[in-house]
Image (tube, helix red, strand yellow):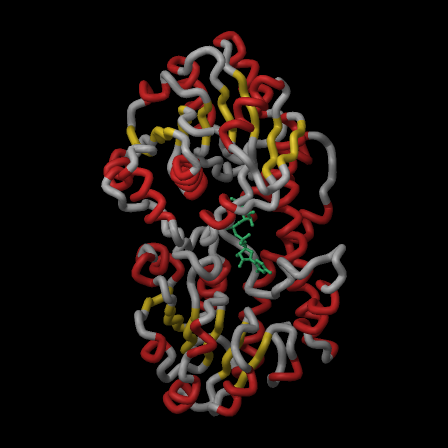
Length: 438
Ligand code: UGA
């Protein structure tokens, strides 16, 4: 695909990764973004999202003049393919808010040459791409849908090594142009119609949510029966039909995608008179996780939350990111604070977390884990950061003797924590503690 003229609109996780990784593969990429400050930062080689490996590829692409960033749509005028990567946030009724996508397509209609292909990477409800294709058809512009499956924190890795590339496209000519853009692939390219590609994205994220909620419900059952959830999911995951991924219990699933995409899928299903009971149930399970953890703290410490000093280890929505959007960790913190607890939070990426978000959750942030855990009645592990297991738990035990450690992610060595003079409570792991999180 050497030398192909590619455009990208929107430089969030998906857009920026797409722009720099396609430039790495030999395309000439121009990315348009409305936020001038982001454009300046990127043109100076400073990434606007926190992703391992991204900076080096960005700097290399800029040095080779293979990628550039602008606020000006007119640089799209000679593009062969343009990837639309703007966000589709959750509207108040649970549907996907398509304002940004519609706006971008309007602008592209005025500037793109006939024969160009607009590829929708934004997550859009089934039916959207065909509607956009009809809008752009009079201008001779083709439209395809290529949903993105990369994970935050692994964006570059997932772009380079996807499990699959899904391409929804009706016209062979557009399929050929987009295929050229990706170049030789080591992953399967699954061609579908527009509707199937759109739905495959929602169906995948909702399935991950269902699987994860199932693991959380099983953990609650393990707490009451003496089974160890880690053994249960190990046995389940060994079955190739089930697989081990997304079976790790935790405080619930969150982030910028699973919550909004499961809501939007339900909205679409309702509009078509279809009941997706599994997806509805997994959202209910997820909403109950905060109360379940608060209840565990009450029972393990042996008194109400009022004036309990709690340390929250981990504030982001998962490890290896500084993103706190829809963070289950912060949901748990808010719940504890509303019950009267005083919550101090520590996170390895605290420096990159917006203090306003923590203040809204009622959490006071401390940038040192040992200061954060000092004189705590309870310590609750909310994110699976590997460094938490490496802490000096004996030092923590000395400064907070007898404190309860509720490990919602099961990342600590429970026996070591108990030897350090603390009381360990795993999630679905009754054998290690004085009672589980159920
Ligand atoms: C998710 C999907 O995994 C990506 O494939 C998709 O491209 C992306 O959404 C998107 O639509 O843009 P991401 O939001 O980065 O990616 O987060 P995940 O890694 O999927 O984690 C989601 C949540 O599930 C996190 O809160 C995580 O802690 C939780 N989780 C995950 C568990 O609680 N247990 C698990 O076993 C796995």
